[in-house]
View 1 (cartoon, rainbow, N blue to C red):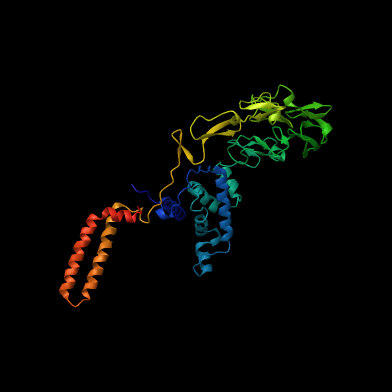
View 2: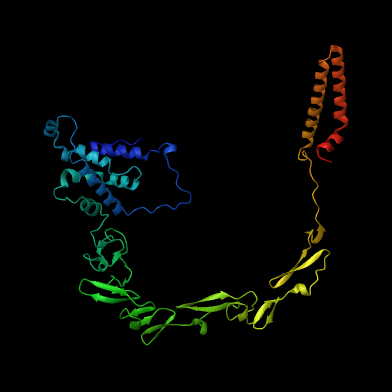
Amino acid sequence: MAPQPPRGLVSALLWGLNLFLSLPGPVWLQPSPPPHSPPSPEPHPCHTCRALVDSFNKGLERTIRDNFGGGNTAWEEEKLSKYKDSETRLVEVLEGVCSKSDFQCHRLLELSEELMESWWFHKQQEAPDLSQWLCSDSLKLCCPAGTFGPSCLPCPGGTERPCGGYGQCQGEGTRGGSGHCDCQAGYGGEACGQCGLGYFEAERNASHLVCLACFGPCARCSGPEESHCLQCRKGWALHHLKCVDIDECGTERASCGADQFCVNTEGAYECRDCAKACLGCMGAGPGRCKKCSPGYQQVGSKCLDVDECETVVCPGENEKCKNTEGGYHCVCTEGYKQVEGVCVKEQIPESAGFFSEMTEDELVVLQQMFFGVIICALATLAAKGDLVFTAIFIGAVAAMTGYWLSERSDRVLEGFIKGR
């Protein structure tokens, strides 16, 4: 059974608007979603409700100077009540509250239309704050500022200054959230009432806290100077109220691979690869090797490449030795290339004829065209003579000759065309 429109002007118009928006639009008007785009998270119902109220208030501002538009405003207001508080104005405002694509807004408007009508006609005077009356008191989607959760509990730090004014209370103003304080940089604690790691308390009173950064490597400090450190960050050690970098490479704290060496950095260390010439090393370059890699030899304090081509003779015919870093290769000499592991002489390609790329069928067609041109030329010359019989005879002889040549001279002509 088809759904029936509700009674009442406002209800009927809203019902029709929602029905229209629920219908699928033409295919060419429906935008395609971007490929592989994750769905955007739906806004909290409290935020949707507050946005609806904001849009409703803007609609009231937009229509504050409007009237019924019938031409006789005085009569209309006398008979139909004033436009300012009329049902007509309410309908006009509600029609523009939600954008066409905002389905959350339309859904909420459909659920709250009776409440909106009740507020418009009966509650405006006693509850002028529509957001508080609709979103918090009636629909119970929102909480007062400084509170959170289903029971609207106070945020840490109190409702006046949630999170001490130095953080954001999760779920504040809504019926959700954990109430946990996400503190600003430099602040910490349950209600952001303390200085965070790496900061010190520069100023404090009953309502004010100033946290400033410690000197670079200090995790806790009493002031901004290098000598005010009380605790150091990882990779540093406290020494006479100063944080001194720990050389992990000189201790057992560093953990590098067998073919790597350690490089100390401020508060940490890095593992870098040894040179190719080294099997294990104590630093960068071929002069810091513990042992030379195969293909290298110790020359003074460095591991240098061995030129194997001074002693190695490549066994294959037409091969020569080519030295490489840490080894060698056997390659073909100039003018030879390797084919299946053997060096063979490179073949110089033959020069191709002008028509060498043509297929066999294309050559036959070209031959027939060639002899056809000759036949036509002979017939034309004969036709210029005085005797018609002579022209016919010469044309016939030329045609037979052309046919005979085209049948028996394929190989000769094909070699001529291909340049053979």
